[in-house]
Length: 251
Length: 211
Image (tube, rainbow over all chains, first blue to last red; front, side, top):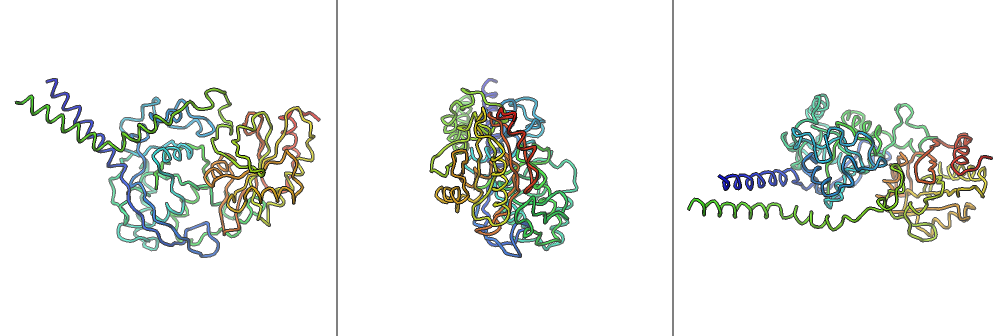
């Protein structure tokens, strides 16, 4: 009997570790040029180099491992400079993420925490351009932004409530083999603060608040889902911790 | 026999486990070595202090520092880039205007930090030149540059947004921020050539000068 328990424990260990390995999978995104929604003057395309992206957002289980290794990021220890009072709000203790969400994306995470977590794994947060570049792929095309079905699918995902409670990696992977870019949570990018829109888009040219802002207009006004993402990024600050905002890393 | 099979099975399982987790294991070992007592354990800084930022900065004199070295001074900060032709000269003028209204012998020293958002162009030498050109060579003016990442991080603390539009042109928010002697932000002034009366009175209060 004792041995049976032993075997079971060992097996369990392997199972959990392997799920771990599975969710930490990465995929190569081949570089290329594209015109992002915002951030370049006129319709100038920019060059993206090859990068390797996590195929899914970082989960509660993975984040738990991170805070255990780096206790300064535990819920009770984190500096307020780096995360406001909502940090890991749904955890019932320093090592107690919501049990049913172990394989769902970790949220209530600040930009500083997300950045530190990626760095501790030898990775980094994607730039906004990298993220958008990877996310413009459908399951068949590298750039599906003109594809009405692609846009409708993203809209449908955005309209679904509480998608952050779902496990990662259950949908259809995109062209690069990456999951959940639009389906579960918003995601931090390293330079989320790079594009400036004031609260009202009519104020976009307010040169007193932003030097040079006039040259930052949207390139593709039809891409409504991208507009939503840029507007969201523009509305957040680095120490915010939001229930629908997670992250993934790149190399 | 059953026992043996079970033992072999455990052995294999453990083997598989070690194999499948080996990268994890290494990672853990490395990070355990990395964790050294944080500086704030020895010196208690206030929780919101920018002195917690570990980033290294280079001054216009070429010295390498962390922000915590400014502990004990009131800091007035702005993010600029020296090639800027539009707003930055006005931002710099705003800083100089504030500095003029603050006496040089406050009981707590006041330092004026100008942080470059274009560290590639703004080398220490370039910042030094800029400080001389703009009559900001006195010791209370400190120009800083760091890596792009550290700059982005500090911009996030200030809630300053910026983006590179072309290799020589940036778009950025115009915000002057004031920190107390413990590195906690106390005041922000947004916009160009706005009335700086409130900013000046905050600095005076923090610097222990009631004039």
